[in-house]
Amino acid sequence: MPGPKKLDPSSSPRALLGAELRHRREAAGLSQDDLGAPLFVSGSFIGQLEAGTRRMQVDQAQKLDEVLGAGGFFVRNCAALRKSKYPDHFAEAAEAEAVAETIKEYSPLLIPGLLQAEPYARAVFRAGRPTTPEESIDELVAARIERAGLLSHPTTPTVWMVLDEAVLRRRVGGPAVMAEALRHLMKLIQQRRVIIQVLPYSAGGHAAMGGPLKLMAFPDAPSLAYLDGLGSGQLLDDPASVRSYELTYDLLVASALSPDASLALIKSVAEDYAHEDQQF
Image: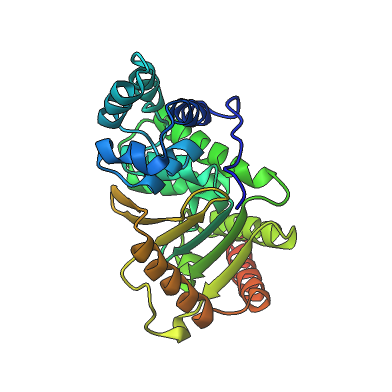
C-alpha cells in the first residue's frame, strides 16, 4: 500500500499545518486513529487535517497541542488560518476545493463560481447585495475570479459540472452579460478544461431537486460532499453520506444531455442572447 502523499509545506498555510501535524504524530508513535481518539474524531479525519482537506478548529488545535506537546503551535496557526476571504459557511469548502483532484458539481440556478465570467459574477453579487458599496462588490468579484484560477492548470483538477437548463435561461445581468457568460463556458469546454452537461427541462423530475451538490475527491484523503444553501453550507465526510450523494450525481449525469449536445445547446442560447443584445 503506498504511503501518504508528501505535502509541500510551502504550497499553503494549511499544508504547513498538516505537514507539522503528521510529523509530530509520527514522532510520537501514534496512528491516525490513536490521535483521533482524544479529539473524539475518526482517524480518517486526522488524515484529512494532515492532507489539508479539512480546516482545523480551535478546540481541536488546543487538544492537539496538549496531546502532542506542541507548545501552542497549532492554536497559533489555527487562528491565522481562520482568516478567509470567503463567507464562513463556504470557507472550508473553498479551501478543500483548492486541493481537490476531482470536482463534480450540480447547479440548479447559477453558473458555478469556478466557471463564472467576471461580468456575470458581478451581476450575481449585485443582485444578492443591492445596498453593498461598489468597493465591497469589487472585493467579492476579485475573490471569485481568483478562486477560478485553479483552472489555469491544464489538467488538474478534473472538473465535471451538470447545469440545469434554468442556469442558461435565467437572465443574470441581461442578454449581453449572459452571452459572454455562456461563451466563457464554451471556451472552457473547447479547451477540454471542463466537462459540462446540461440537464434539460424535458428530463422532468430528477435526483437532486432538493438543491445544489458539490463532490470533491482527493489523492490521499476521503472524498467530501458539500451542500449549499442560502447563506449556509454543510461539508460532509461521512462515507455513507458521500456515497449516497455520488449516486445522486451519477443519476443526474444519466438524465443529462451528452457533452456534445450540451455544448450545442449552450451555443444556441448564447447566440440568442447576442442577437437580442444587438436589437437594443
